[in-house]
Image (cartoon, rainbow, N blue to C red; front, top):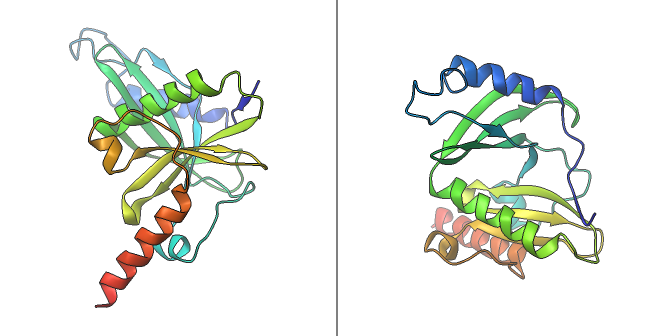
Amino acid sequence: MPILKPEFPTVGHDILVNILSELGETEDPDALGGALVQEISDPLPVHSLGLMEVAGGAVPQQNDQPVSWRYMLFKPDGVSSADLNSVGNASQVGSFNRTTKGKIVDRLYEALLFVDEKFTDAEETYEIRIIEIPSINQAAVWLFSDENSLFIPYLDAERLKGAPPSVKEGFLQDAAEQAQHRLGDSLN
């Protein structure tokens, strides 16, 4: 199978179900007009790069630890996501971080569907991850490979204008230029 999901914390699903129950999102299906969670995906690791790291040309590495685990939540009224913070090694989760709904999650889901469609039968094996660079408002599905990592942005100017998902060549180089520009602006 060319798309691999990294080993994830198995207790996260139970933690998330308990939290969603407390928020009233998994009990009576009529209580919130049918907007309750019907399915929770396996989580994807979320990696984050800071402004200085990106500006300095940092490249995410295979063994980088995720900052959180993102679960896609499927409801009758659409998709949303929930993050659990990562602590220690990849087999541990910490506290509940947030739920998110709206265009960003819709774009993430479209990027995941694109990956499923285009890379399920790929010759090369990829490990699927998410990378976020909050300081320059960039995020992408990251297909990690020792040979050639690929990035499918879901939070960038083109995607938010409605462009379909695609692999972006030079994603990290463009991010580094944007970060350097942002740093230059902050120094002036």
